[in-house]
Length: 423
Image: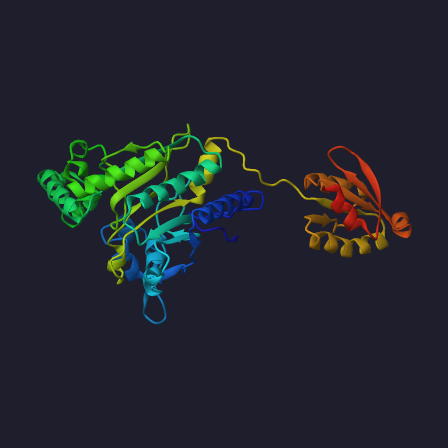
């Protein structure tokens, strides 16, 4: 019986993995420009981190976490998202005491959620995320959104739509909460069991329900915008002002509700408008979470961040037919004829690589024609051909594959001469 990959996971093979590496590299480069530094946290954490940080009423905690008990009878969970772990590390290592504030972090790595696999959605997925902790200036909200948009734009995505909303401060949310309960309670029996459970615990999460999204009460539900106090309104207006100054188009959607409990004030999603992208159009989501550090045991610290999956990023690139500049081939393929020449290319190949070139040679004792075909498959820029006669005469033949131009070079200073060819 053959063993196959678990459902909801994938193998990323050579030829495809280069796209991932390119996206990851570009995201890192942009984070460096914006002064965000990388943080790496464990793949599993104490379960309590997510029940407290993400929220007990969320689908993530209630239905999607991979939780297990270890040999010490501790409940541990494979991380379903990155923010709670980053904030836990921020608190545990007392980064709030660093002189450079706000603390700007980014992370990248596998996350795990037990949900129904579908196009662009997996049970193990790679998430890239950013967190800015220590500032409640609305300008940092705009910066975080600008960073997310910059990553997408830098890789050629154009059909993007930025949706923003304000979830308000604690006072505004309490007023909105009461209005939602009053609105839904008389007919809550018409909603799914999840929504019924959320009515008292977190009624705003009802607005995020996929099952009952077409219910008429959803369309007439009171908007959080109507319950924002003056401070929250002013904050949201500033965020919009800064986004306009940054020439970032956006749409305000009062029904945007992020799926995790820790959000307040600014919430946003970046969606793909590409034709054929699929029913789930969200590429990236984020927002402000001013109470999360206290929930995890730290001091009151404002924060904002976003996260996106690399899988959905690649799906969006495919939908827009964007070709990333990857798989460009190798610099040199060594073709050898005869046993002595073949032995010599072992050391020559190493010298090429140590000089900074991507290079390869034949390992299957193929004929010269088959070796040339192998070089062509690898998209080699040059081939260097070494036979028994060339070896005796201390020379090597170099051919540029694109043009057919050829040079004879002294074997002893081949590396130096090959370097000159690149200039």
